[in-house]
Length: 91
Image (cartoon, rainbow, N blue to C red; front, side, top):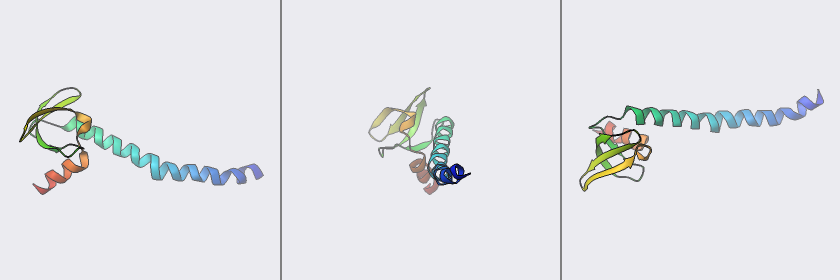
């Protein structure tokens, strides 16, 4: 019984870490993956580096975005879910 009571604080720390750090990160990654898969030609997006554009072409892992400077080929993971959602909310 004493071993259980001495291990209880450590177990509680792991539970707290799971619910405040690991689980939210897993949910965020799941939402980003869904966002990447839901992209379609014509969507207005913002990359994580701050480039604004419109989706011109889609491939398995890459996307071609049309900007004022021309067309750029980027990885789908370079598109920011939060910034793109904010951009589309304003419009």
